[in-house]
Amino acid sequence: MSGWEELERFDNPGARVSGSTVKITNQLAIYFSAGFLHKAQAQVGVCENCVLYYSKPKRAIVIDFIDDPENWDGAMKMTIKRSCAQVSARAFFSYNMIDTEQLRNKTFTPILTKIPQLEEDRWVIYLDG
Image (tube, rainbow, N blue to C red; front, side):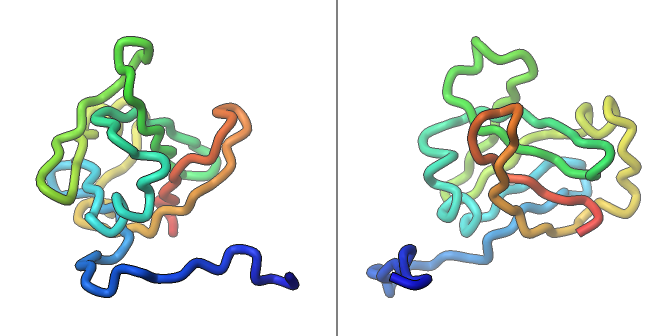
């Protein structure tokens, strides 16, 4: 098909979907926009929890949405409001000794990335990006 394998028809012209972004708030929560949750539906599904990983060499946060928090150490409950969500990450930033001064109120474009240790694609935000 020469490059057209992933052609997808847009069939919801009335949709109100914001940009696909993740923001670190002034209070050090990670905020998932409605646009991101819509785009990440395959990974988020009905999950209400997530696990965060940090790669110091890449300065990247990996977000793993999970639906069975009892089986995951470090699972964090997301606060879900209508069409967006957030998770408190103050302890995560402190534990990983991430300087948050330049990150507060910064918006990132998450990238779906293959993480070999996690077996499947996960959403990643690059703090230098």
